[in-house]
Amino acid sequence: MNASKILSAVAVALMAVAGAAHAETYEGVHQLTSAASRAEVASQAVVAAHSANPYATGANAGPAQVFVSSTSREAVRADAVAAARSADPYAEGASAGVAPVVASTVDRATVRAAARAAARGDSLPL
Image 1: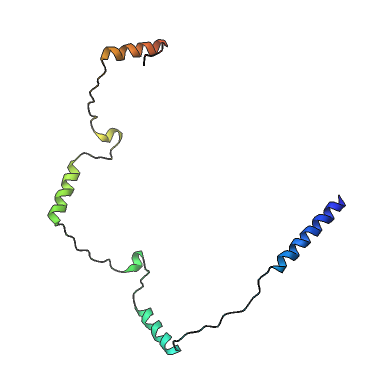
Image 2 (image 1 turned 30 degrees about the vertical axis):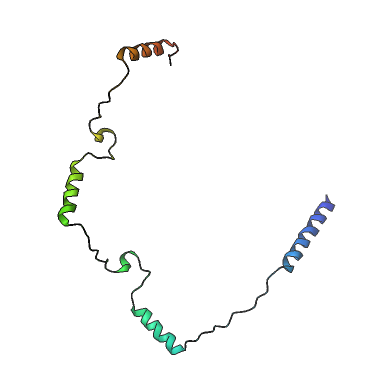
C-alpha cells in the first residue's frame, strides 16, 4: 500500500514538472503604434461623443424612422375589416364555431355491426 502511494506521488510530481515545462512566457505589454497625434485622437473623440449612438436599441435609439407605405389607408382598413369578419383560422374548441358536416361513404348498418362486434370482443373485419 505504501509503495502505491509513493508511486502515485512520483507520477503526480512528474506530471507537474512536465506541465511547468510547457508554460508560456510573459512578453509584456505591446507598444501602441498609431499614425494619429494626440490632438487628432482628441478631436475624433469629441465628434464621436456628440454623434448618435449607432448601437443603441430600444428607448435609447431615439425616434423611430418614418416608413412610407405603398398601400393606401383605405385598402389596409378594408383588409382589416374583412379579416375581422371572417372565421378565425386559429380558433380551437368552443371558439372554433360550428363543426363542418363531413359526409361519410360508409353505410350506417356497417358501422353499427362493427361497433357490436367490437363490444362483444369479436375480431373486426378489415
